[in-house]
Length: 205
Image (cartoon, rainbow, N blue to C red; front, side):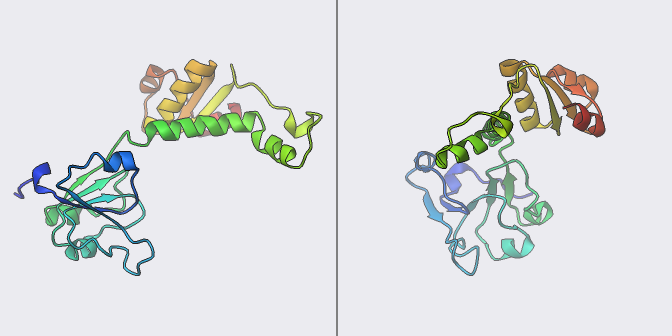
């Protein structure tokens, strides 16, 4: 059985994608942090000494990549999925793989609600009209609608879908329908979503 690395053992980190300064400031002074070189022919350029890679979903971490990174002991995903990481190869190489299940949940849910409101209020068309010096009248596509009390349909009720449902139910008193083959009606009801089939969601929302 491979010995699990401890934080004190891991002193060289390679960032596949840039992190915010506030996040970088959380690393101890003893840790060397190296940014990837996006323009490099080899996407793993500069990663050779890395003990930890903070990975997005952009690159594929397969057995060949792990063979080329002999010091690698941990791949830390900044999102939910680990589809781009060969978990069997990681296990064989003694590499720990982590993810952040709720890392993008709030941001993605808020963005979803923002897009919903932008559609309901015709913000894109309104902004284009203002840029052209057209101030009205507000007719046709510029007549927006309120979302309060309307029916929202969600396809997928994972962490993000559930958070969107919560925001729309509590903030806008919306009726939320959902389709997810992996969720029971009882589970959906626990967060005020009526579970139904996909055709019904599309027809009623």
